[in-house]
Image (tube, rainbow, N blue to C red; front, side, top):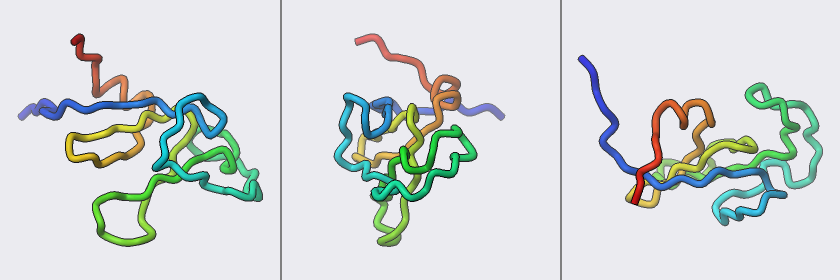
Length: 97
């Protein structure tokens, strides 16, 4: 069987804390810059990453690390979560308005 994603979403590409797009829900992952080791996904230092809190209300400390250049998916219910650029390009296409 094959399935098609039914949901239309909004998305913003996040370029890191130094980028021009500010997404208030994304906090700095390592605010003190102590973690200089590279991320296994993007190889940027972990101190350049963001953290987005889960909005599903399951637990207080749950969330996701956001790499620079990840897309932030914004669902109709307001839920936000990161998506890697290659997965985003394979899954979504721009809707002409």
